[in-house]
Length: 221
Image 1 (cartoon, rainbow, N blue to C red):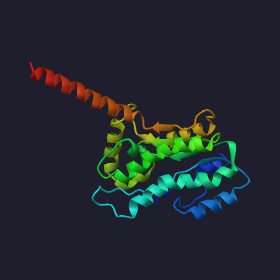
Image 2: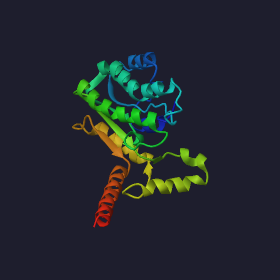
Image 3: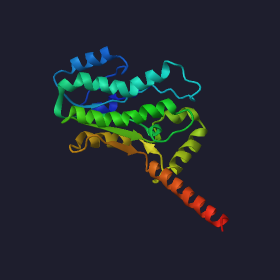
Image 4: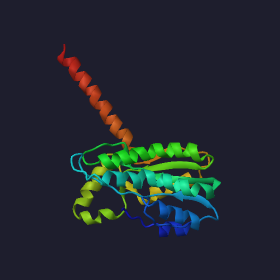
């Protein structure tokens, strides 16, 4: 289970941090009962990544990862909807693997992609309560310190893959979440916080197609 330190930011805005396993419905129901006086906004960050190639996953791990990322937020909605204020909202977390496939990211990618669709359907089901998702790119959360000398190279590579020329920061992701909590007319959307990496990838593919067509045209003359 991936852990997040939520106490510092939530204390600054007067929120309550609840740590629980999104795969355990009884824990979610108990948390909702404790908050029965009313919920304004919910931010879920649960995940249980299983980063292996398609020939390697353990039978039980992919369902656990999917449950933590997708089913968990649905269960949060199920138990918290009755006590969430009509003007409230929920923000879910997807991620870069949802749109950028790669070796070893099958389970994570499918789960993150499904989460974006879950946000749309939950927004329709829970209206007028708003539901949105944030999809961060590569973010320097401090966890890269364990990489030692490789950290600088990885950060440089990540930055080169964006339009803005820099990797993400936790403050940028947090700021996007805070904006969504206040954006009363935004619902059913996924906000990508990855410095334009998706568009740079698309631009590279388009450039390669143009070059390929030009090459074919020249060789056929």
